[in-house]
Length: 279
Image (cartoon, rainbow, N blue to C red; front, side, top):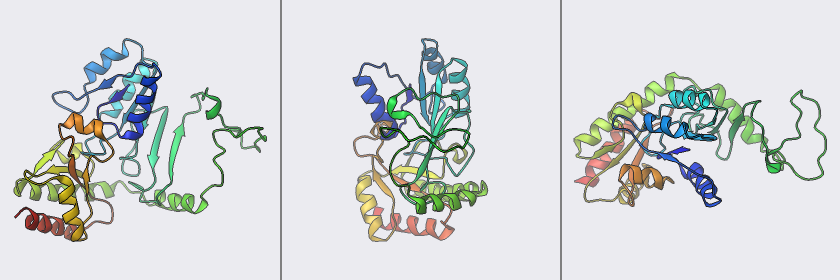
C-alpha cells in the first residue's frame, strides 16, 4: 500500500511488484487532507503486508499524517516504512516505523550521494540479496562466498564524515525560520496572481511551495529564473503520480524550496524576478 503522493523512488518499485502479481493499493487524498484515513482503514481490514508512505510530498511539501498511518498499520500487523527524504534533518519521524529511509543532501544539508536506511531489529530480511553478514554484537563478520546485501564495495568515507557533521548541526529551529521565509514567498506569489497547490497552512507543509501561473509553463518559469541565478524546480519533480493527484500533469509546477542557508533577501529576489517575468 502506498499513497497518491509518492516519489518515483517508491512508485516505481510498487509498479514492479504489481507487474509481478502483487496487489498494490494507492490511497488518495481526503476532502480535508492529503490522505484518506478511512479508505486506508478499509484496505487494512483486507490484510496488508507492507505500507510505504512518504512523510511529505516532494512536490507540495504537504505533510501526511504519518503518526496515525503508522499506528493503524502496525495495529493491523503490517510492516510500516516511511520515506523520510523530505523531513529527515528537519523534524522527528513519527509512527514508529519498522523501516525508514532518508536523504543526506536534503534536510541534513550533507553531501550528495549519501543517505541512510534504518531497519528495526525485528524486521527479517528474507531475500538472499538482502542479508547482512555483520553480527549485531559487534564482532568481526564472517567472510561470505558470494556478495551480500551490505557488500556494496568501497565505502564513501568522505561523504559519511560529511553526513555525520551535518546531522550534528540539525536543529528544529531551522524549520521555523525556513517556513517563515516560505510563507513570505507564498504571500508574494499569491499577490502576483499565482496559484498555490497543496495546503495553504504553512504548518501543514515543509518549507516548500508548489505554484503555477496562467499563460507560462513551470519549466519556462524555472528557465527564466535561472537566468537571474535563481534556481527552482519546474516540471514534475520525479513524481508523476503526485501530479496526477494534484491535476497538474503533464506540465507540473514551479517548486520553490527554502533551506537553512536562505535569508529574507532571497525571498525578495525571487519575487522581484517573478514580477518581471510575469509582467
